[in-house]
Length: 71
Image (cartoon, rainbow, N blue to C red):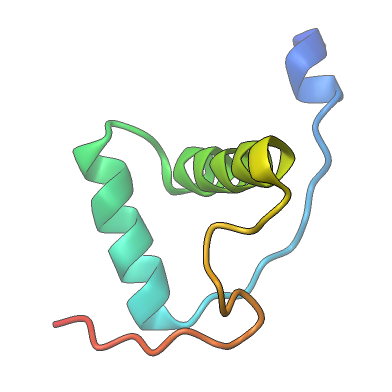
């Protein structure tokens, strides 16, 4: 079975997330009617657009691990 061109052009990247972050993204994805993978791709795309727009990352401390106090 052949894949659509858009699927053939995508790179696969293994990603490890801690459980709290995964759960938060999964919940957000459900709210936005996306898969977890689709939500992560959307969020990364938005960050890249923001950086291209003003030369800065979305967060000031982008390289610091986030504190996840998600309840």
